[in-house]
View 1 (tube, rainbow, N blue to C red):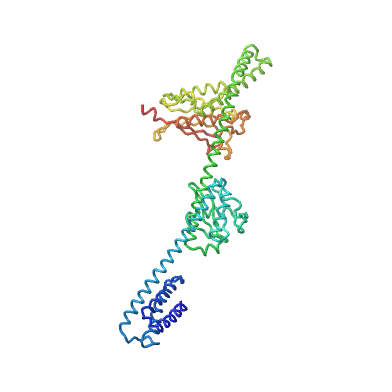
View 2: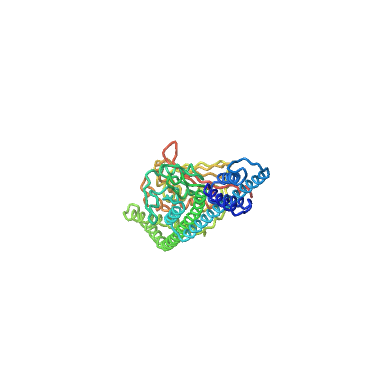
Length: 491
């Protein structure tokens, strides 16, 4: 700035020697102010240059020379106009320079985001996304950025990727996963300073997807432009990761659907093929029972064959019922049923299969009418009684309790026993297909874990609910299911 004013003064002396008017010298000083404002980033220094130019012109080119005093009052107008013009020139130049800088920063941000978006469209894996984002951030922010990915359950992985050099990336181990998870749950939009890094979370539509990590020293030196660029890249990264997660889940669901269809088809085919020979075995063994004396050893053998065949036949029916439910081919034919009659039919089937066994039944004194498919609810009760039988000893109590809930407008069924309680780790899985537990009397070993699955599907088809829990005040288990009464009461 001082150098430019000195040059302007020399040019002014040259102009005065050549006889040029003072206005030309003023223009030279204005040019010096303009150049100073363009070179110097500070607006304040531009104002200083304007004032200094005016004072220098007064000191060197107005009488009396080499003093700041003014004899000709007309020069005061010149000085004021010169100073104002210098102010305006300096301000406009600084503003133009600032706008140019903003435009360049926006251009850089746009190019960076465009480049990142193009690279992310070609990526089909979460870890590849991390690699691309780390490289892009490191290039834009001149740092060694890093990224930690989270799994679909929202848990951080055991290592994160970091840019080590221009063309090299490394994976670093995480030693305090629980602490990272805790801190991220407390953070949504801002960053978190922790040791070596400043961390910015990447949130998707449902949960946290990852963390962008910037070394602390570099993060402290980030300006507003860098911060805005970082947040824009975080949004682009979140969209790309969400898209990958959705695609992975869609593929997983499709594979599970195909596997389930194949399994259902196989089970249905096998069940249909078993039906006819099982019916023949049951018929033949029943004829042998009628033709043989009970004291004969062959009677015991025929009875064992008949019971096993009957169990297999029941198993086949369960499999067919489940496949029909899953395929939506089992039509729920609701009509008003008397609960007492449905329970009686289920008990008859149960006792016919298991022999004498005391069952405690508690039902309302007034007939309880419930809209249901009686045949299917009878199957539910039979399966629950059969399950209770497998998990109790002969002298353990099995009970059925039914009550009407006037507030919730539901009929509540509870099948309970005071046999063996179920391990807590098994409780969440009991309604899953083919999930079995060990029985008390050994019969549960012959099950394949479809009974409760069928119960669950039937009750859900009735718009009801079903739960299973251990008894709190004593040993044992209770299964509770509900059926809505509104269909009946609205008629």
